[in-house]
Image 1: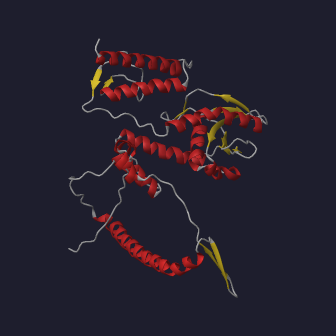
Image 2: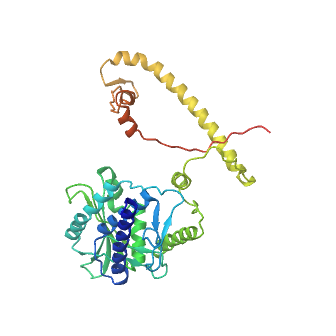
Image 3: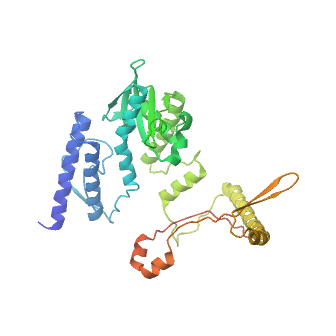
Length: 364
């Protein structure tokens, strides 16, 4: 058996295991492996498909909906697949490992009974909407059920949870879960340190039909765009987020493509961009001029300050406080790294991309 045949056998074995797990989970409601074990099998299959460019028909990596296929046929890609990008894999795993801690302290502090829930739920009116949440809880005050989402964050993100605040994207996530599972109450347990007295937030939400309608209206639009192979509309999305999303959708620009002819309805926007870019250029020149003047005035001040960090000039009406503090930053010497360790430099160098609209007005 050659290497290609061995790889195919491995892929068939992985498909068989995943299909068996799918059947147990979705058809018999009797999971035979943990979510993590299932994800690892999927990752192994995705890696093999990416390495070989071979996808076996009926592979769970290609499945959108429907029954598991009995007959398997080979399908070879016209060009190799790229391995899936696993951004922040360690961070995601850390969050998964910390979920039981957040759940434990929520139960201790709230008195509500917390239970694991590994069922995959489907919305009654929106079949595409599935939900697999962290935990369920039962309220001690009235015995009603709720959905618990367990979160962890760093100290610099703790303010996002201050005074029972909830980051908007997490609120939408939990409201989506409440709608899918048809549950009226939800709560978060988010911690960011080792002291549950001060480093724990447990905000609650009640179901809101208005917000639910808004969520599913946008989801319906997104599903329609998938079914019709049309990029989702960016209407109502913050410009920065919209531009980042478009950059991910379309990637880098391609030299040699024909010039786009814009219809007349874009004239006002294009002229506004050109005008504002001109103003930014003028402001940049003015800022540079002011910075040079500040430097000129600062020479005599620096001579007087020597190694002192603070100074003061008191007048009859106010005080002028002077700060002249050395700020230190550390960063690699890229020139030295490139000269002494060119191989390491090549391995660690990271290419960044930026793409901004620029409008130039040219006389006819």
